[in-house]
Length: 448
Image (cartoon, rainbow, N blue to C red):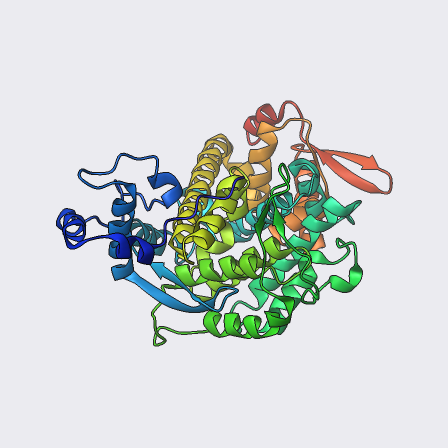
């Protein structure tokens, strides 16, 4: 990742212009966007400017248009200058869709929409966010191994697994205090949860950094991309951040709740208040803010899953803001697109599960006697088992997947074994339940 070229200074540009040149810019009326894109100078300098303007005059006209829709934030850069944000049309369109799609509860057709299965989808998304958020910061454990660890509840074996386990515990904790105000102590607690047993110095867990030797660096070239504020300013900056997090709709400037959540994410990344684990903490606070503002569907999406597909764009969104006078609009646009992709991913997942469920129910419909004896958890397991013959199911895994007590999970699996739909096998002191190769035939044969 390279540092973007810094834009020309607007004041210096203006002072060089005469009345005729200023009139040329005003007569063309450049808007804040270029073909619906909110371009940084680093991109704009490669585009062809509208005649008779050159690139610098074009940029000055765009900056004037952006200034008209820009508002200062009560959040400061390391020089004490307020960050600012704008709401051009792309942001308004994204907010409209997120307001429609992320508030409320899961809604889909078929079994995927039933209240009894909500916890299962929540657990899957929490697993995904815990895994990919850790992978963004260096965890190397595969998704398959990490999911097995979280489902079975076994202890982490190494630092990568510990990062993922910590993220999972932090996400659960955040759901527990989503209705409480944010405080510096709460942020420190989130950091403690995500970083415990993963830092080189255990004393850094759950405390603000005490040095200024923390930098964001291009690992390929060694170029320093970002120097965070002085560590002595962090307590005050944390108080300011929490005041912003807890502000309401009567505070000015008004900041849309989704934008507020994204800006909290941005500021923790910018301030880098911890020796390590800043990204995981920032994303955790983002989820807290979204849930607190009533975006219930946020529980079921993973933004880190999207960010991991293009981590350079994530980092570049920070750099575009920092190199253009603290204009956070670049970061807001990037994160809004990320949220919408994550929401679409959830809807695609639900559609697949509903289709699978309908297929299983058609098969179960051929055996009314069998259908009447199965609960929704057993039907879900059989749907998966049809796709994965030979898969082993354990009581603890079934318990965690469906958020039920051990005895309920045990009764589910034993019941399927008694019907001949799973094979019960002794493994050590416990039983495992194997999906038979001829499961479809066994299911269709019941009740005849």
